[in-house]
Length: 500
Image 1 (cartoon, rainbow, N blue to C red):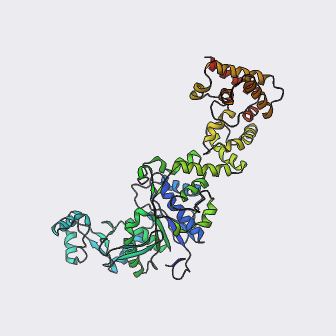
Image 2: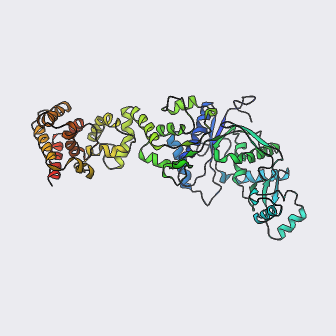
Image 3: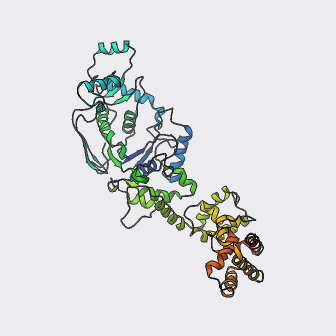
């Protein structure tokens, strides 16, 4: 099985992503999906998606659906897999039981796999008796079990597991990320392919699926590197029985670390992809950041589109060093993408968040759309994620604004605040034209020039009165959108709070 960079370079790259549908979707897992997708697309190959769902006790249909939705949200469309189809289905391991049983039978018949009746306690006892560390694991004692011994074990009620006969030679490969890697002969014991009763295990089913689906390149987490010698040995056996046509190339991606230089665990809330989607990260912003967890488009550039990622992605440039998930950097990357959106696109993407909070209709009314279109360019420059629109713009879509307690304590207490609100009310009441330039000129005249207040002292109480917050879109534009009646009513309501 050769791919670009190998001897013939004639086989198109085929990568795969094969998660288990259990619980939340981990950002580190999606980073692995992203790199497999980008590598396939960069080389003009195919990206295969399949589901590892043989563990019925842990897998759920809800998690399965959620995985599909998450991939599609990120834009990682697959060429073969669930709901797309392809020539190598089914693409759920729970539906491939007959395939695995057939392969197991061929491995046993060819002498690559054998029945093993030893219990863990017996293996440990033999290790201790030989003066060895029982942590060395299985000792190969069942390799030459006779038919008579097998019959005796079965008479006792024992059921065997099936193990692969590991070679007595070093196992080496050229890792796409880490270079040459070698495991010494005997370092990896004969491992279990199927439980007693015949249930196939991960060390069997993934290589079998990769072989039958023509996967040329396996990009997976560094934590799986120690299992690669098993896969190499199994591929040799699968090739011998005609299931595989060679061994794929392996690349082991750096771990994604959390706080305290520990692997980002599923228990860490920052690992949950849904968190970023719910907060209003753009999929292209999150894809950009995930790509930076172990790869760089250039030394002096952090921001790029998914298309630019595909154009530039070289798997051999993935770093072997662990990558730390930095939420602040992820937010900064997303903010850059958000601000680069065309205004119409920004409005389209932000509307569901405002609708979800009950501020606008799912399809905004004409008046709501007018306000949203007008404020969008100003709000867009002040936001990091789309959900911030609820707090930032909500005051424009309600009859009565809710005043933030901290903002009240800071800006609407004491006689100074009352004086500012009175002066602002008087200036605005007499204003003939209600336009942004006129509003700005009137308030600066009344509050800065006539009252002698510094801008922050002058406009802070007015901003809180109008928006309920100390941070808002530009004040004068907001007041124009609200109109004279609403603006004056809010100034009056804030004055009552300031004198309470």
